[in-house]
Image: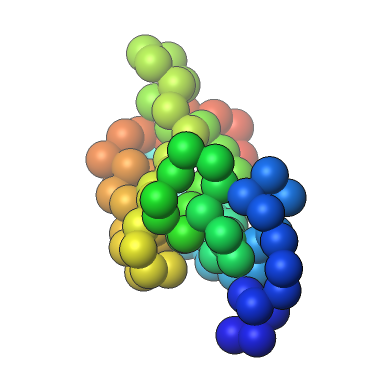
Length: 97
């Protein structure tokens, strides 16, 4: 946690990255999502939360494409927000396993 003590400004957006993987099963097959959670040393400008999670693939592509993401006060909270969107909307791309 000492890296957070580094003198930085919100414009630099210094962050520690944690990578997660999720396999979503659907009737057409399964697809792997990579989720990156950023833990910011200082929240980005205009944001009060330090954790941001974002998936590597869009969901709901045929109606209104959504890139799953989530903000939170903790890594878990940001990750859960991102996972909720992945679970809610279908993946309609071509990365089937």
